[in-house]
Image (cartoon, rainbow, N blue to C red; front, side, top):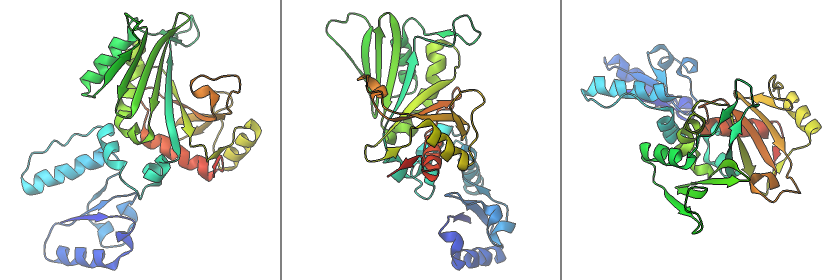
Length: 303
């Protein structure tokens, strides 16, 4: 008997009564914590039974393992973080992946320049010669639908737009410098997070620290004054980054905010935005939404 314990059911006496009755009849009862519930912190008898929580891909794998064992089936027990995110994004009980948080975001932008890191330093990386082909191959390898659009004057890939559901990849060569810009709808973050995590190693031949910009909907107010921002984040218990000056550490990422650049009409720089630096191959929708939740609690993002 699988007993899924959610925040609502944990407060109901019936779930404990029925589970205890089944256990008294010799039925194998397995409690499973969902929607942020930790079965180690619920009431007896469920917290005395061997079970697990579903809070990551391993939890989903445990569930399938139990199903295979009890019902003599042979379902795949290995899940990726991306596959877990596709399931978790539907969990409205978890504020970190609540759809209402997605509605606060206009777009998420990811930007890759032709070179990263100081020239001559060990971290210096140069983008591959044909990034469009590299991106195209990555999309095909991951069975992602897409189509390309190029101007009639372009006989090569020097100016290419790649459209995929909920995502636009824009490649251009500006004054001899390669630029890859990605614009993602918030409701497609969970679907494309794996691709974005893989792109740095595809584009540079090695993993590099990457960044994204989060543009919120216009009705929201974002604190961009550096003194006010640092005061609010410090009061909320967030520490300053020891690596990136002016940034704070939240959920394993370094974040700050920027005002709109009144002299720029290009891309994301003309808008107020949250600037987030994430570790190589760790671009996750759930992390972005957790950070947004923390910024709301710290009064950095307000209605």
